[in-house]
Image (cartoon, rainbow, N blue to C red; front, side, top):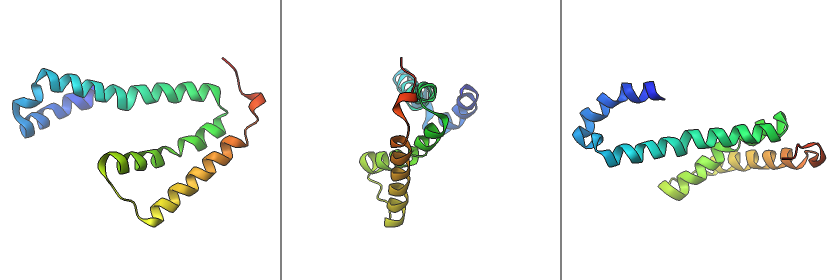
Amino acid sequence: MAVGAVLLVPVGVAGAGSALLDGRVIVIGAAVAMLSSAVPYSLELRALRRLPTGVFGVLMSIEPAAAALAGLVVLGEVRHARELGALALVGVASAGAASSTNAENLPRD
């Protein structure tokens, strides 16, 4: 991520000028970077340690549905019926996989 940031700073400065180098913008950008990558990654690793790998994989497939919901709520993006149906099927499959897991075999912290 650091390499990507260094490579894209000149492009950002060319488009936004010196406003991109404002301290407040840099702090907000760093916070967004942490909240959008490092925090979810650490939570996924924690879940991977606690869940069977098959269930974890199926539950990870629900991420696009969560992104679509966030797009609807935050950005007002509307999905077509076909896309909503596909997201619903993935959600049902994830719920089925999670409910079929034997809770007694899960590790406890």
